[in-house]
Length: 418
Image 1 (cartoon, helix red, strand yellow):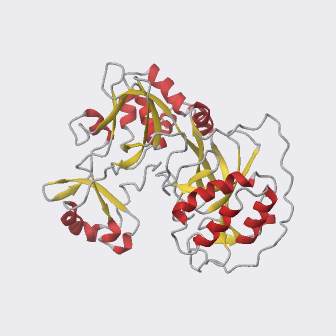
Image 2 (tube, rainbow, N blue to C red; image 1 turned 180 degrees about the vertical axis):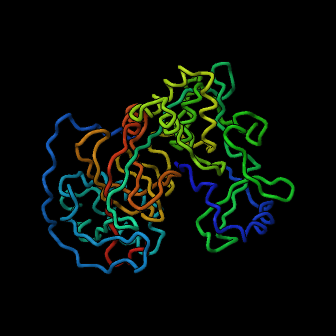
């Protein structure tokens, strides 16, 4: 699942390259294209005991490069809260799945091969492997804070049709032919990693159509429909999640994933309703917005249009594994997270410490950084993938928890400068 990516609003530093952008825009190629949900703990589970020291203490590694904006802090496994209590094998399998993409990167092939060799080993042996092959590095912000925010996402199920009807009237679009994506680093090296999206009008690259424009008709998206669904709010939240499944009216299942985005920044309509005094903060969820829409049907479209960002989809192969993440491998329910790759490298195993949604019970487990998201920005920030279906959606919708992260980095490999 490719989740909504770099916002259009990141334009600073590109003025010198706009002329060159316009020249190359005409040559740009437009894009073409279940695991079980974890069961939450009981109402009063015991708090996990403090971890016992690992059998082997790794050597003290060299610190990340000086001058990094968000430096990692070297740690030991006995400093990781709950390290001895997790089902390490589940997290290790998620990491190994990511190795199909990760092993092509320098230094990862050996550790990936070693990880594969212990996937069926007893838990104690798997834990020893991790303790002898990796060093934990605590992730901190540029100003030294080590606590951030954990939210959740999932793969929703919608109802739809391959043809429009009076019931199925909200289109799911694939990427339009007139949507141009420019990698700014190819024009202005200082902007490496930033993208500019737009459309060509005459000899100029201008912003692409907004959500209001696209939903209003008459843009390049028309004629690019994959399917039509029966609920505008469900479609809106499908775009936020970045992937999902559509049960078609003929009984078949259509799977869709992120293809591209119109380049406009995301704006939270739930937050907007809270700011306007029309909804309490604790109700600002998908269900809360649906309920608001039922009470205010004449105002719903205007509310949705307040978020100018629009996500386009592509059809995915059918199957019950997780949707593909930004790393290019299927996500694992409860063991994959979306991160800011500027702070946490994609593919790396990560020790996550948080709590269950709206609860004090600890959530401490080995996960893999396998996805990204437009709203996932900053060092100590992650989005937790809950899996597929209503139960996953209910957990994801309630999750807004404190977060601590430790990246497990292979011993002998220099940690990337942050």
